Amino acid sequence: MIIQNISRQKIMKITTPKILKTSLYLTWAASVLTLTTTIAGIQGQRQAIKTVGEDATPSIVTAQRLKDAMAGMDANVVNELLLPSGQNQDAIKGYQERYKAATERLVKAAKNITFEKEEKSILTMQRGFGEYLTKVQQARDAHARGDINNTLIAYRGSIEIIDKQLLPAADELDKVNLEALDNSYNNQKSSISKSLAQIVLSGVILLTILIGTQIFLSYRTKRNLNLFLLAATILTLAFLNYTIGVFFSTSQNLRTAKEDAFNSMHDLRQARASIYIANAAESRYLLDKALASKYEQVFYENINKVAKLPNNKTFDNLITEIKENINNGNKDKKNIGFTGFLADELNNITFKGEEEATLKNLSALGKYVTIDQQIRQLEKSGKYQEAISLCLGNQPNQSNWAFDQFRKTNDEIFKINQNEFDKAIKQAFKATEGIEISASLVLSAVSLMTLFGLMIRLKEYSA
Image (cartoon, rainbow, N blue to C red; front, side, top):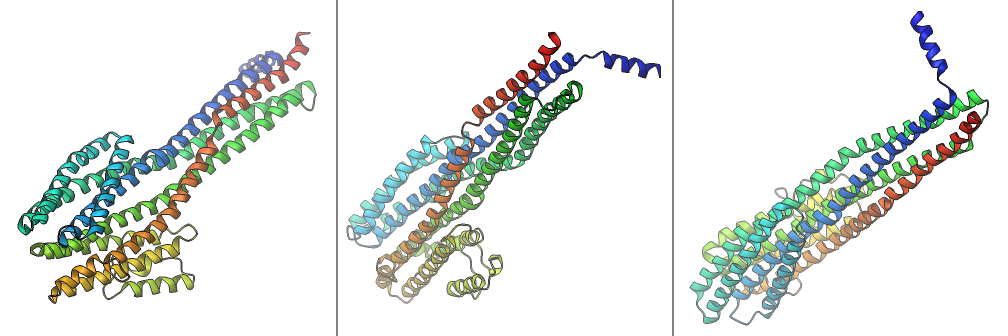
């Protein structure tokens, strides 16, 4: 009882000015805390957006484009070697185009090194690329001389380099950046709740002090409102509402960019690179008969990466079943029984026009595979020249035509997702613009309003 009385006496000795000054200092401290947590949270968000939008994704796309450019070079080389020297001008032109694309993308990859492990992959490609070009030229020279044996030896040497050095290095470059992107994105997802909780907690503390001071003043001085404190409270509430909205907006845009758009972009680029490799393997099958069975296996391995069908199901059957599911309102495509990059893409349909374009791409793949089977049937029945003509033909229902149809429809889906990716990243960056300055101004205003509001009362006690 004695201790309680002493405590009450001490509390009663705390004067109103002391309480008001303490409230002022606590308001300033809470404002600084809110500002600090807001800036830290926004900067974390912005770094995640930068990693996804500017650092990792461009490098991943460049790595995949490098891969299909190099595979395209190989396909054009073998197509050139299938006909007498100088007769396949389309292949010669195609080789030069893919060579130009590969060199430009290799330079671009070197300029966009963000992570330490990227350098090793790029150096491997730079060193191996020159060796590959040398082997290709040796094969061309032997082909021009009519030296079939040395043509095959040199071409096999180029295959050794592209299959075991260049393409794996491109895959490693893709992997390094994909891991960085996934890590940054996953860290951002796990940290957003923590950042929001810290901002809300610090904001609630600030609001509690402001409202508590207002109540104290109303009780002690018998005045209903302190307009400066009321304005500071309203401004704090508005700031918290805006900041939380920014967090949710940037988080949603980042999810759209990564999960909806980028994941599809990656699957589509993987599919495109695999088709380029399959296309080269199709021509290798005709050029190098001693290793024909090996190249046939390579062809189907890469086709299956793009779309592996269940036994006894054709592409036409599959597409019909998918369309029936869509017409019946069944949007779950996972039960239709095929796997691969296009299956993953079909299960990640998000944007307008994406579903129709994906089915067109799947149909183009079916036509390409059907024509490939015709090529093999012609070759096995002794109609070698007819098989080559079908393989190299650019007319409708010929192999290069079907390959080009796949490439064009694949580009169509990719562009849909690329546009949505760019839009989401742009919106995310825009949402975080100037938050640090706005937060500093608002919370400084809250501190000043609190100062003005309390100084009026403090002057009454000093008078």
